[in-house]
Length: 422
Image (cartoon, rainbow, N blue to C red; front, side, top):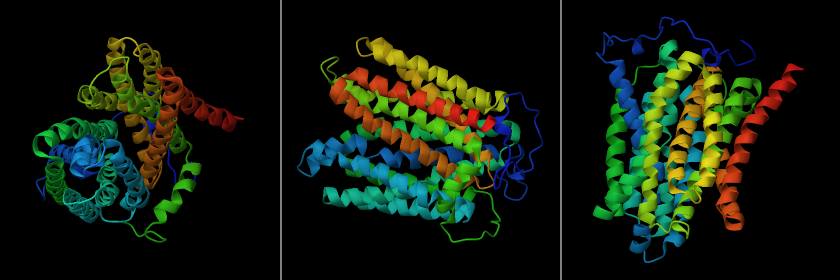
């Protein structure tokens, strides 16, 4: 133990690691002799469940024009519903995700999936924007299932393939986000936004309950403190673990840079520079699929070279994308390249940092919650600053915010490391 509640993770090693036997029989290559469950099929099921549940956070965003028309108002008048989903997810991360260290995951995944589905059904039946927002808040708060499954996957994966297993779940998460924004909008146009909410509820119920039933049995050790002790333990856990703190700060910098650019991109594409329609600009969301392709590759890099080298490479990629985005203010082809590069950087950094966060303490669910909340906070703050920058300085201001966020994310951790070395 390097400090109270922490242990030195294999993920931080920068040299090639020698494969070690997997002590967890549930993820051995052979099927479980009792259940007959294939670990590879279980991983696929978890990735699918992650995709479906992650999509629930963003399902309302592409449907806002249809929702506004249904309620007899303007899109700007209901735009706040998409923000409610983000706040709901943040609350769920704080209160529910840390329970993975204390509560049986089978029951928790099943319960949260059912609550999410019921809230989505309530949203489909909503007669006002306020009622819909309340339903979206509950659905987003309960849809933290991916952050319950990632720690389990990391804990039970063979040590020499841990990052690749985590990457498979992250690929599912990004696929769900893209599907919500692209396919959700198309389905809403064809069948109506209420049908999309009902469909999301059905998929959440089916995948959530199937995943809960397939999860390996767990014996939860007795822990002192109240049920939500994980929430109050987060700050101390981050302080005691330099590796967790570094992962949180660097991902906040990376996710903030991505959020600043990606949330403002629609403004650039629909303004005078390009004059695209909202639907055409929305197709840029398909570039998010590059993240699903990069995730397994990033997992292999982390397993082979370690998290530190992978994060350094990701930050270099992100730094390259910043001038490309600036050039993209006038050259559309530069935006295409920049979009692929920033997504590759984001997902590589995410796989490396999340693997590090999951393996650096004895409370992986709480550590993972702290990590995701830190990234979310960095993204939300950078997005807000980017909106102000675009209004005052145009696209160049947005690019400057992204560059500054990357510099802060990297130099802040470097400053603490040098101070600790003195």
